[in-house]
Image (cartoon, rainbow, N blue to C red):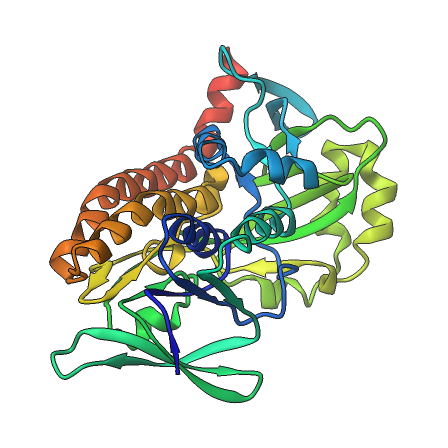
Length: 365
């Protein structure tokens, strides 16, 4: 059996940052990640000025920057191929968001974490059971690592394992799920030489089409489609679906046709948001998407999870020092974050509902 102060289930941005911060505070920490490394499937990769400030506070931003990131110079809004509005950085800032490849983000934080002897990261590890004592307090996990069962005893279990959180399900924490009436199809194409680092938002038949310039010379494209419509859509020809994109940005025609040749070149994302009834139990906390799934609107999901880690780390450190990891003690984290998360989710819903109206306002100005 392994022994640690905190076991973190999930090695995404929130779990990885929390592991680093706890280890830095002298807390023995084990991070469990089910995948085999940092090159995971597509996840959110845009960070805000607030997250940038958090990373700089912990001397991590410069390490990530060395591996590669891209600052967005502006956000543009198009109706078809007509530019209707441009947003530039606020006074004192040099960007309107930063694209950070998740592999670069995770690699830099993990590398910094490894300097601490009280830190361990276990890949290819999937949690199968939560361990409780006779009072119902969570005291560790059982997991499968490379086909073998392991047990980890801990004072705190943290679920940072995403929207389909195993920890949340095993802890039987109820969750309110909210549908938004749309899903998103993602795809990636190479950027043209000189393609500006810009986020481009397009109104297409009342739906949003978004183009995000990415580090390394790529454009990530997201199409909002009707909820649940992808199975039917993929039975049809692709050309009509791609036509609005090509009409709005004819300069991308050749690249789009070369790189998007079948529906298999798209990654579908089921869009929903959620809020868990509670984020804490005795000896257990859930953070990030496990506690509150966000929609792609505003690209704030990764930022919410990393702020969770930033807020939670000192609270766990204090709880361990006081030998009090009760739900009542850990509740300070939930109290600190829950109202802001609710406001951000409501803001996302409002932005989604008024997307077409904003374009109409831009056109009139």
